[in-house]
Image 1 (cartoon, one colour):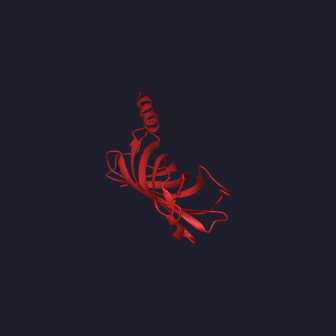
Image 2: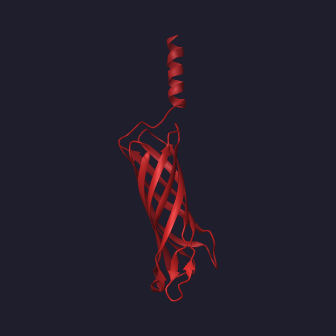
Image 3: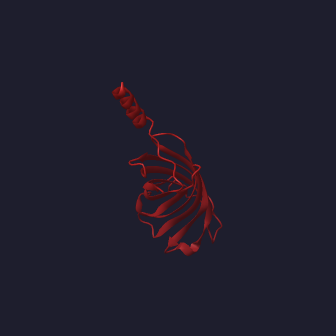
Length: 174
């Protein structure tokens, strides 16, 4: 009888495993790929850099900051994006599922950037994480950025630079 009880306890512990409740969790990620939603000319990303930083509070709500820069092949300028986020982690055992919203800005940097004005941007994103130990989690994220407010200074024409960004990262709980 003891063996059956111990076996059932061990099996349910593994099946219903969820990350323990921590006072704070810190997440760090990097952009892996960037794809513009609409494109004129070449749309392949030449270089991509930046970070996604998030701090989750004990009640499943979190705050984050994104900063990334991408340059398209054949261009002399880079698109720089900065975002501030609010997100919520769903209380699901076994995986960490996050949904978030962000607001920020997008601008142009590099040769010729003086011809453009910085514009506002917003995003929605989701992230799925897999606990590898009780304190650590690895995750993948998808961000959909909408930006229609960058302007050409000489004409006042607005430029749409909406983008999707995939990311990867890890988090640690304290």
